[in-house]
Length: 284
Image (cartoon, rainbow, N blue to C red; front, top):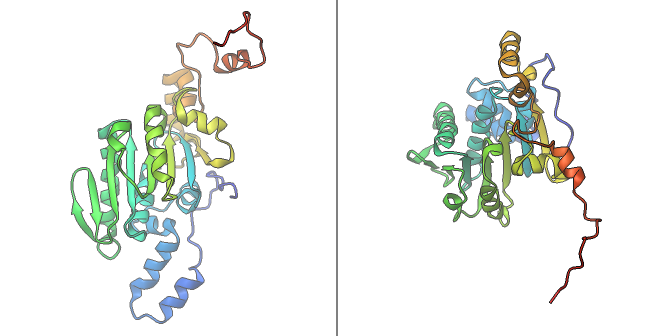
């Protein structure tokens, strides 16, 4: 997969020409919505533009990515939740029978993301998505697709199968047992897993996959400086207030915990599998 375009590009996102398949179908149809609907099916970034949210370059890249596993290491307030809401909506709309799971460290946080998804479906209207069932924690579309909002605890998510998309928001703050619980859900379905988060120290599965996951993951990092909607004056004041933590909250850097006695790198370098034990080990 090619590297994502730089978010610092001054040019705004311009939708590409319609795919040839969409144009061919549109010529034989008298319905003006067919072209629009097919264009959005082929390009999730167009679905975002459909509700007036023109994606930044990095958001368009994320929406269009076909990677099975994505790591999104981003500053706070850069628009990751709105982008994820569009991606979850697109999956449900254009994948009949799909199961989409939205997970966060707490039910309140999952609910906030879920409300953005429901708002997106409402903004798109019945031309795109007809809601069949709607409650506080899930929504079911007429095509059989379901979107569920759940707290980030391993015992609450077990039992789902055939999952098309799992979005794990604030992944750096979620316990490792949740990651262990959700991975098997994608074994048969071949569904997608997206981990979104601001860093929270050199710990946990989010940091481990970011630093050691290798080519199994597509990665993108977006700092606050790269978001055109965050004023430079605000960031300067935040840098003054937060001190060293600014680089974590807004600069996407994995920092050692302030209470740690040793740096993460020092601990790793001190570990070795080549040293011989001081005493012989007797195996019964």
